[in-house]
Image (cartoon, rainbow, N blue to C red):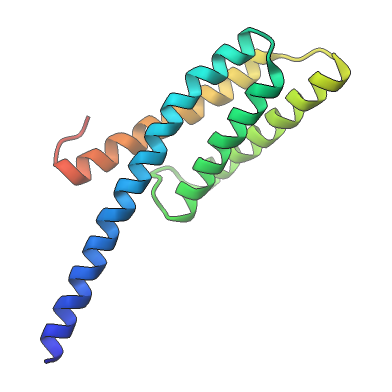
Length: 133
């Protein structure tokens, strides 16, 4: 009886991990669709829209960190989260104050997050399908 319960518990845990991986891969894939929109908004001066999309990316990154999905150190992820928060605030301030915004810094931050998301996607796929993309 004990072995049957242990096996059932292991099976449930494995299925739960598979489901989490699928949801995680979905979120990571969604972030890879959002990032080009951020670039477009930044280049066209639509800073409020860019800030909203960056906030979506920030939330996805935060959730992925919370479930230990990311391969990078927590310090690196925390630094990226902080950068994104500062970028969001800068974009909001630019909308209100029409100051001097350096979008190249924001783009550099987005590029760093895009690389993290791509690496995470590859690692999930490698774990699931046995081939590193």
